[in-house]
Length: 462
Image 1: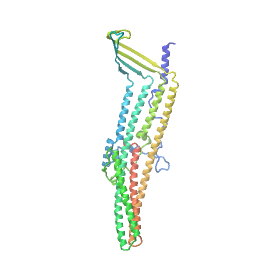
Image 2 (image 1 turned 90 degrees about the vertical axis):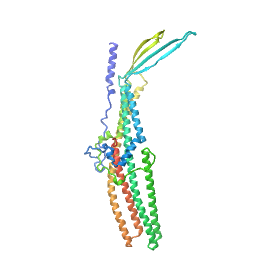
Image 3 (image 1 turned 180 degrees about the horizontal axis):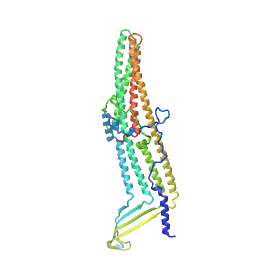
């Protein structure tokens, strides 16, 4: 058999055995997203999805309708440092992808050289070469192809990372804004209560002068007044600190934040999660985990391709006046071409070890991808239950406040009839204040549950 036939057969065998090297990444069939949402009320623990509508697909301006909040979010998207860094990382990845795609083309270099030689003090002999050298790596077995595809996954990964920063920033600004509104309302309630307690102190002092109560009761009333006044000071401190945090989030010096009121806010009542498969398409962290798997897949392909021959073609063309033997003038045109084929035979087990390592890394990336899906499902399930719990707590809060308001009225009536002490009025007022502050806190927790669900479903992309 002729040597050329043997060579062709070897190439054909290598080509057929390397078909997998050229295959693009596909999501593994055993990656499972079914049943990852837990129903907050169903005994079966499975959320029955009857509507494919997903609130994560709602544009953020439709989600957050407060004009002042919208202005803050737009300012944050334009100025936030993390957001700007994420945009630059996308640009870096895009440049690297372009570079990877250009690796399929030949590289061309101009390398002029000149020498001047003299022997025994004689005249100088000057020789020069003006070559243009070209080198081309022929991608027979997908080494460059898989490297380019791997770089594309890195580019997509940077885009999803930017999405993640964008979503976190939007929801972070919204959460901080609503926290400010909560503190504002708590401050308003507490300030009114301080005024009531100041009046209580005045009344108790008048009653003591009239001999209707004791100094101990007056002292107790004053203590309650000072305690509530101190909590008002603490609330105002929290407001200022929250304003400062939001200012820094917007990349500006700490300052007062223009905002609305909690009573003006309108949030969606019907929360829609869509089908679990949408979570794979929407959530940036899930997409990043999948791109890690895709990158590991292409690394494995590159490790396989390393077993096959590499073909390099080089060519040099230009002018020279030195042929290596004599020097002539003027210079003459020269051209040289060379093709080399390198087939790995023995590399101290490095190629095999590298393939085993990349396969292991691919399996780890696959497990991490599945785990990220489960974690995403847990986050959605937790937020759904939190929203449901907050709704139920608000019902109890309203009922509690209603009863405590009646208790304050009844206690005052009993005091007027001499059947209760003024301290009992103070106790009922303290209980009412605590219940009112708790209702505000539970209401904002419900709003934040909506925001967190929006984020958990991959909201904020547009």
